[in-house]
Length: 151
Image 1 (cartoon, rainbow, N blue to C red):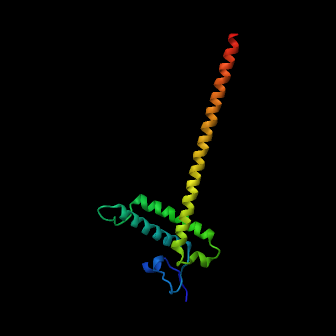
Image 2: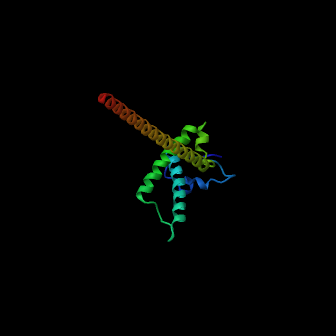
Image 3: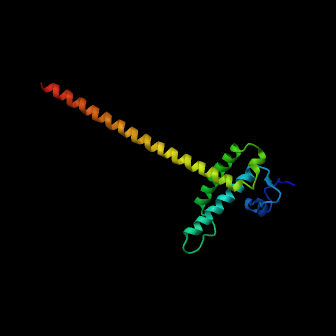
């Protein structure tokens, strides 16, 4: 038996992807907004766990405004990746694999951002080397022309 949540005002347990257990009916969300909320809840939980590990005097009870906005942006990007990668709507909405898929998509985004950063650094180094070479070449031409003018 499959359940589809048509309303976003379902119980928190229904919205929590970690409540999906093996042997239970597959829970599916009706919309991308619902999926984005499920992705956000995963990101939020992971962030709260990381903050708790970093805190000496107890875990914060909630994320601050900047952390929430960053988590919402991440949820939007990751949900979009999940939507585009899924071969079917059933695969996209499958909560039993959602957390694993979110982590894989997050890794892909991280690797891509690192690659772009490295390419940007390489591009800057190349531009600096080219500029330096051109400056040296221009100085050499100046010195050559000044040397010929003295003869």
